[in-house]
Length: 151
Image (tube, rainbow, N blue to C red):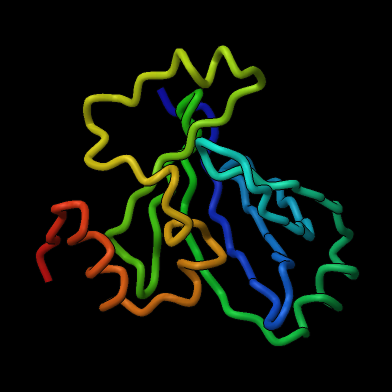
């Protein structure tokens, strides 16, 4: 059951590890934040150290003037998954991401039967990489998982 829906616009600031996010919720709320994700070399799922700074509209506008590459999607929260349905040149891509608070929850998780491919350990499917990918590159990556979408 979907508990929260939001339209997300991410601006990946050129030449940095920074992401500027605008999330517009179905109830009219808007969340603005600056995020830095630093990859951590651990075995298993891709891990990151994440720092979020929540912004005022004026702060967001200042940072939004920086050169960036944009990615947009609609996120449906279906605990424990966030299901992202991408727009633009990534239209048709749907990714689910599970979030947990303990290692035990991670180990006990079984992906839903509707899950077509497990890409947890594939950094190409992280937002910072997807935002740079062409549609042809994405189709090639999906083909490696035996997924060949219709044109």
